[in-house]
Length: 137
Image (cartoon, rainbow, N blue to C red; front, side, top):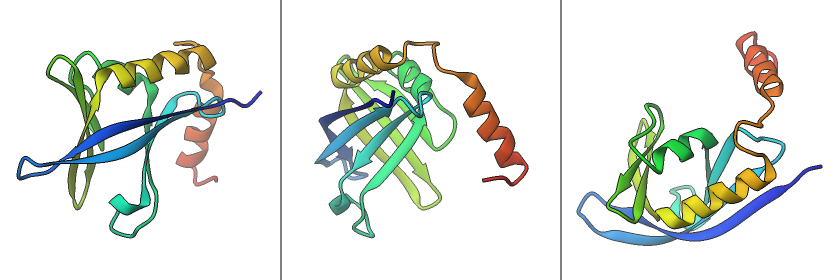
């Protein structure tokens, strides 16, 4: 059975000149992609005026709530006692988005109600990964 979990939340885009821009973000988790979480940003925040979704490992979110985590395009780190910063890296630059840790933790806990921690099936993800290595869709 397919289950989609969405949690609207507020966040703050941290600018290079130490300003903050409030931005609504939707946190999304789906049972058909149990290894991933999605951050959905509204169209008005992107340069091409289209909704932007960043997808990364649910385990990275769990790690980043407690300590620095991530080496690639998505990195997380605690920011004081009650916030977590998600850094989104592209060839054009980096965006830092600050969330209330409590909101991210609540979302993660709710995702474990859909698919418990460690209960993700590995076979479909492995099959897709192996297929992509050999050019299959």
